[in-house]
Length: 136
Length: 126
Ligand code: HEM
Image (tube, each protein chain N blue to C red):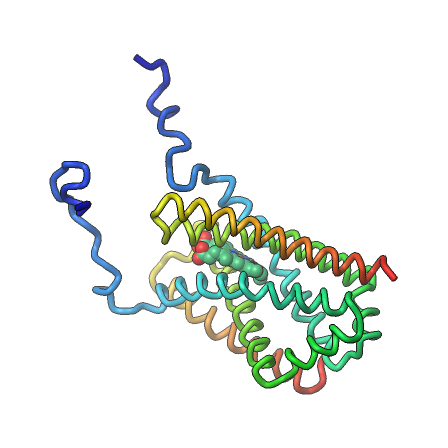
């Protein structure tokens, strides 16, 4: 069968170590979280579409949507979506810094990773406080 | 014998078929998404507790409607490119990859069209 050694009849080449052998670093965790939040935002656009469509379709559709999203599980999903959006946004800014060729020193990279985590949770808490105080 | 250069032969044979364009569009839309995401959070916060009439007024107002149209276009392009990258990274079966990339495009367009329709109806329709 197609093992790397015999697939193309070549000799075995060195493989890079598999992900399991690395001890987790904040940078790799933030990297995968950026991808996971991107995927979550992708799926969650269904909610955004539903929200807008319900408002456009009339009072009944709007009531249904509000009662689902306003319920406890609905609220939790919205808070999660808010965090995912903010985390992905701060993570994106981190990518821009790297794209400009800056921030690759180990310490700086670690700080940027922690900064992303702290900023996303902090901003989400602020948004929640604002929301529970009655909104904008 | 072929008159093609080695570079010409190999072009288009990578897993992604193209690269720089994808990268650049991803960044361009990502930059646009920053103000648009903040706008979305703000609008959702503004809509808390709104009844249907208030909601219609909010979403149908020119500034909000325009903001959403921009968010939808930029977001749909960005998320389609992003999901394409994820599929290309994890799916090695060519057939499955082809189908998933197609569904990815359909999904992004469907979401965008539904949202644009809703905003048009709210801001221009009865
Ligand atoms: C809020 C502003 C946003 C910024 C600054 C941003 C930035 C970025 C950047 C820079 C990347 C590329 C990451 C890489 O090259 O590894 C990316 C990937 C991605 N984004 Fe966004 N994005 C934003 C909003 C969104 C939204 C709203 C969605 C979905 C609706 C989304 C979905 C994705 C997906 C699915 C990926 C692919 C993830 C990956 O390959 O790891 N993004 N984003």
